[in-house]
Image (tube, rainbow, N blue to C red; front, side, top):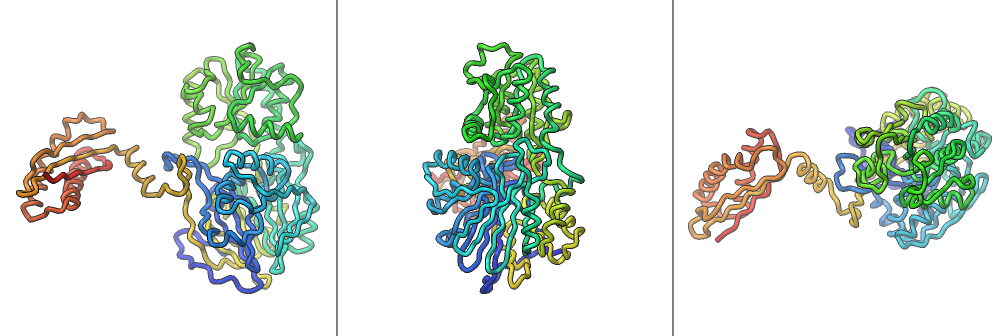
Length: 563
């Protein structure tokens, strides 16, 4: 099995041979999010998905994390189109930032996917060029011949895409599962997968998220009884948190509310926008009289109210987190029931548990996947992946979308079905796979970093800045100011120390002042007059004392003023 874990040195890729097809993973490998793959052949490029990754605790102040778009900067004029497999943020969220580089790149996707991205782009004041496609449709875009295949996922209208080129064919599943009883009746088209397999699939890019989970993913409709049970047992309001694009889950909430005589209000801009789009296009059926404006909730008895909001991943600014922090117009209290209708994205566990604890402190009952069957995954489990490998019979496999453990587990499944181990290509973000004369090989890596969206800035936040923020958050902050007589080199005033973020009283820092004075005197006595060098003397002296005495490694800002 060809692989490129990060502790292995992988060279930069060579030039793509004539007649070859290059696949570059710019995101989604080794992580759950920011999915993005670039295909290149005959000097033209095709982008498949362009999503975001949500920040974790070690990304203080960061709003979103984008794929590293630098690879496309000098190739942007050669991009034929952006294919969007479905409308989740981890597949479409970075499109506005890519279109800032070139606004007229066509976007290709299903009706719902394009409606969701168009609404997002309006907020960025970008009017895109779009091409709506359906399952079974085939489109020729320059050197790329695309065919779209229906797949089932936790959002309607998801598509896999078969990309035919002179160099060979690539089948990309996007996110998918094989729910045999989907709410919308739209099955993953296994007949199309089989037909494409008979034609020949040179490289199969498959969703890896649930590759470690044995068996088959539970059908979406199986959670309806659990949701009904929650609604029947709730004494006051029911607050449901899920992704703002999870149309199927919201549909089940609306249906349960209608059965139990409750009214539903959407909370949060993205939730209201996305569900409005889904209802307008016919993907969401709203029973008569069930949906009400959130402003009218005060006129309804609490036991007739359901709120649907974002925040199932513990996002700090989402509605549910703000409710838990009592920073929202909705006051959660005794007798309320909060339903977290989602799974935990790896890395978000601590944030979610903080929200759960905060809600329970306020008196709410919290129902989640850990204590009730209120969520099913939108991704194929191991049994479904095996099924697909046996149907498609690909020549080569490149697992996508998942952490390293998911990718390896998916690769092992492919090998079990008969794909030669050397034809299973496991790589991290930046990995480059070339398909040449029917053979796919990992040929190198392109440099890949994290592009942070931080307030109004994009790409300006660096790892060094995040390290400073983590130090400020975890270790505290010390400033030390000293005035040095320019003529004599002696201390004219100070040193004066100010500290923030320490449990100890400010007076404890009086102990280090003589040490700083002595260190400065020795330095100036040795002829040191450079301000920067004197500042370093102060930093080392204070840092050594604080590390030994207080067991802390704070940010230290020394200031030397000549007088």
